[in-house]
Amino acid sequence: MQTEPALPAERLIAYVREQWGVAATGVRFLPVGDVLSAHYRVEAGQPYFLKLRRDGLADLPAAVPRLLAERGVTQVIAPLPTRSGALTAELDGYVATLCPYVEGRTGFQRDLSDRDWIELGAALRAVHTTVVPPALAERLAADVLAPVLDAVSVH
Image 1 (cartoon, rainbow, N blue to C red):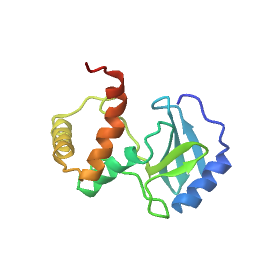
Image 2: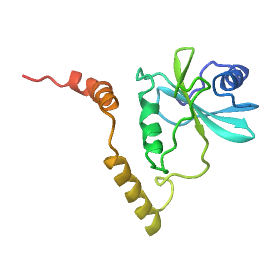
Image 3: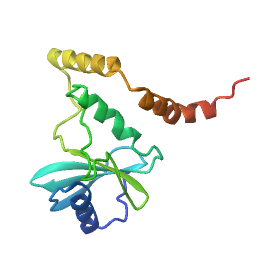
Image 4: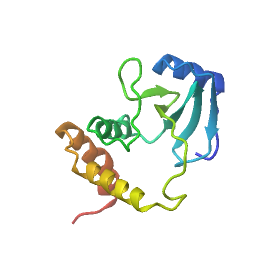
């Protein structure tokens, strides 16, 4: 979202404290990303990245990076579990995730060195060779491919 949702900063700070147990002291809206998500930098001694989504995919976008991180793909930034152990929490029609905040520029914003390309290749290999548990694989096929399959008429 390029426009900040009508959620008071105090409410977001309290929400992060309640759901994740993070002693948030401030939030700053970041006008980046897709049109269905709002992004915030959360200050709490160390910064965090709060993402609020309205895409209808529940916890699926959080489950995949969590799995990859658990399988040792260190280049993936996985969401932090809530106090209850869930990967997401709900707030006013949004599904929220909280991750560590990583300062820097993406590979789209700077030239990659030879070493960067090697690390990117290794990360992509790790992502594409990770064995996905059957239950998650079924959800990925159903949730991710459903809009595509609905748009394609098969005769």
